[in-house]
Image (cartoon, rainbow, N blue to C red; front, side, top):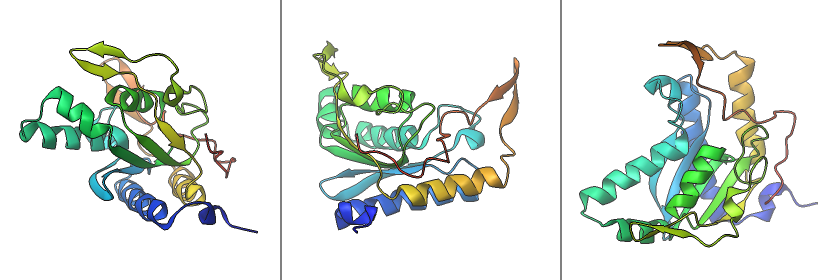
Length: 205
């Protein structure tokens, strides 16, 4: 019987392995171990890892880190909004955990071409587990001449067991960063990338 890895190309697995390496960096830094890479024309052009604790910012998920790095790079080159949108439409994201609703919405607005993810995010997944922001059937609206809210291809279950193993390692050792002080008392920062660890398989979407 073929293993889950056999279902995907060697190129897909290679890029997902790069995302796994980013997740391991997050784990080494006591962050929820989620990592990603953005690929264009067969080359990884940006990467990111979860940095919510380090930055004290609940929005600094791996995807947002990689997106912002890429936006800064293209803006420094003087690319217009339309040129940036065109570039994103040629990019593919590889991420170890299904993008949450926030990240999936951002990917839709940016017009990403395709997403490959590892394990499902049963609590906050925006690519099929909770919402299906990747499969928008509505016509994209226009803002400032740039199309927004596009759907994108999405494939789950790539190296899911490896991704879950990292998450399990983090939560079994205890998360010292569940709560941090903020102006209104305490704020949960690690609440989005917490898939159901009992589910060892992610169903392709």
